[in-house]
Length: 329
Length: 221
Image 1 (cartoon, chains in turn orange, purple):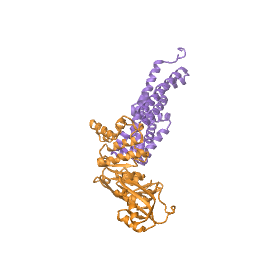
Image 2 (spheres, rainbow over the protein chains, first blue to last red):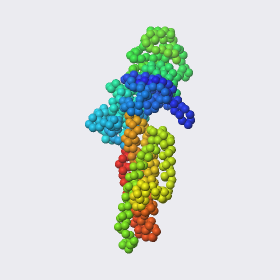
Image 3 (cartoon, rainbow over the protein chains, first blue to last red):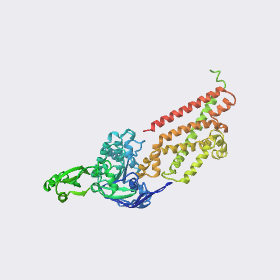
Image 4 (tube, chains in turn orange, brown):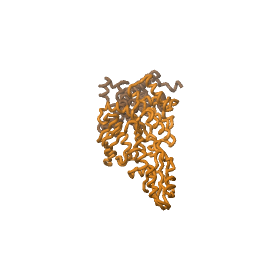
């Protein structure tokens, strides 16, 4: 649905030239929720803005829904943009217009009016739980409500792609959750392709099928969310994942024995694999750190354990045979 | 009471009030007509804006600054030949309007420009992302969003124009300010001075109130 080919963008300023995007290649399949994470300055914001050409790349191609966006004439580009919805961190609603007028705005820009527009707007407001706010102005709404207006507005032209530029970064955790649930629903019910940039790993964990990690204008790691989160390959990914987590530090825990990081996925997460193996091999284990959670609905468990008092290698081998991924710590 | 207002020729005051209103109305309408597009161009051609154009921006800026730095009384005189060319006379209400517009439009354009700058760039970007053309962005998003500032600026400009009209008396434009100078000041007719100043005060007060009401009506912050 979306393909970036060697997209490069440089910013020139008095201080010199800065490379914001350095030959980025990326493919987002139709119906996917694709996350782009990175610290501020990594280039993720520039990246999402090249997809609808709010930022024109210096080199490379952007293809959306089979159309090479970077090759379009101005009028064609405007038409293409109408099929790419976008929502923003600070919502960017029109303060002078009512909620209903905000949602109708993209349709008005196409020169449409009348009952058809009214019906479409009413339907969207209904779907997003905003019907009672139709005649209010944005200043009268909460952050979460404003973002829902932003989503309704983005959906008015029935786009196939929705770009989310830090869409939950200005919201409190509860509202973030509500907006993510909504985005997830839109993806599943409408088959909407979502590209979502964020610095919140939790957002990716909740809704993204795939994730790309950016650093210094490059994609340093990309893959299915669960793979990237459970077995991060790049130091930048590890650093971002470690943030806010109480990671196990071998230097601080005075334990002996064979240390191992075990990753359970899917159904095996809830099976008593560890105790079965321990009993059959005859080893003891202490759990040093761990997390049992879900990544986009798929359950997983990740534990750091120390095997003592028996044949630890046999235990590791048996766990491996049962589909548990064992890594050295 | 009657004794105090001996010098006041009420029909004359009436005519002068009407002249002032005509000058104000005519020059204000034209000031908005020229000032808004000029302000929009100043904004759009600015650095990092939709139609960033350093050369155009510098040129417009220079013209605006030159016109704004010329004292209005000088502008009135310098404009005389142009005024004759434009409206066929340099006298009366018609003769006053061109210099008034040339004096006020650049000032108003700056106020429009700064009102547009107050609009969050994110709104411009969102509108752009919806596939709007530059014209649509200006007319459908920027100007409506900046409307409180645009109206407040028009109020300030209209009030500045009231005092400019007083100076226009120098070129025989008539109006209340002219009466105040010729009779109130030069002939020491204090009663005429008081009446004209009170009327000007009422006019300014009325304009400010009207402006404030309109701003409140279009503000939704």
